[in-house]
Length: 122
Image 1 (cartoon, helix red, strand yellow):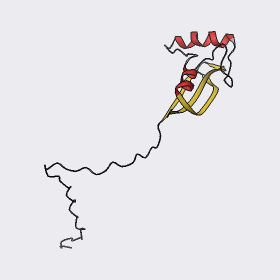
Image 2: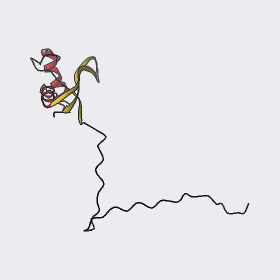
Image 3: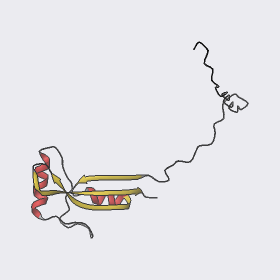
C-alpha cells in the first residue's frame, strides 16, 4: 500500500476586516446584551436570631443564642444576629429560608443557618 493519502480540507474564509474611521482607529461592534438580566446575591451562613426577631423569622431561645457563639468561636467563626436583617434591608428578597444543619461530633443537635437570595434594589 504505497500511496499518498489525500483528503479534502474545507477552504477557510478570511476574517472580515474591521471598519476603520478616518484616523485609522478600528470601530468596535456594538456591545452584546448580557445573558444575565439581573444580578443576584446568594448567601448561606450560620446565624443566631435576635432576642426579638422580625415577624416571620425564627426566634432562638436563650441557650442556643449563648451556646453557638462559644462553640463556633473555637474555629474562629462568629455567627451574628445582624446579618439577616442587614440583607433584608439592603436587597430585594427573592428567597429566604431558615433551618438547622448537623454539626460534626454533635449529631443530636443542629446549628441554625439561613439561605438568602436577593436582588439589587432598583
